[in-house]
Image (cartoon, rainbow, N blue to C red; front, top):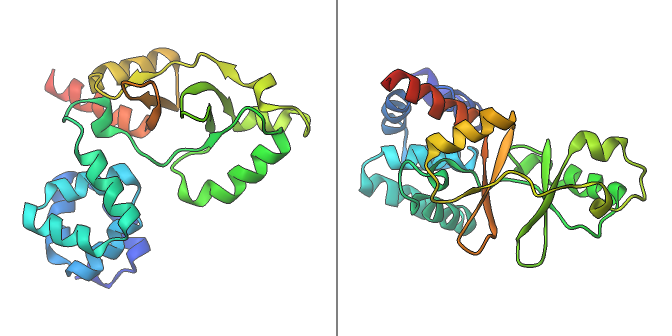
Length: 210
């Protein structure tokens, strides 16, 4: 069929716009090698959703065909309880440290952008990965090049815990008009972000149920 003839990149882009049932049906028709290449090109949260929709033995086979870092990331995201912030978050986010200048921060984001789901917000963390603040790409571009991130970052950003109910996460994002929200664990360390599209899906599902 047409899907099997697409490149892994194109196939990944097509799959993420389908509902879970259609994704699963197409995935089951692809070879393990082709599907593994497709999964490797999907964002972390999308690939977890696809893996979890497949039979367990097929999912394990695919995991072993992926690179170690991708495999470990998927296993970690799969471990969070369904219906929580952890279950819908992505591990592809941008971080900065407070001692960087605006120029250094922009250069860092430029290098990392291809591997991140969004760089509109970057999260400022300390050596223990605790969130000190956030900064938008617009702020960085408008700042003087030698200005320190610490001086212009927005402190005490809205955050959610990894175990927080996903519907509450969606409500917080809508209330504060956020494109993304950081997710922290019990040690208050940054472990992921929930993006607007995933929060929108949760809100849409909730409205459908109602």
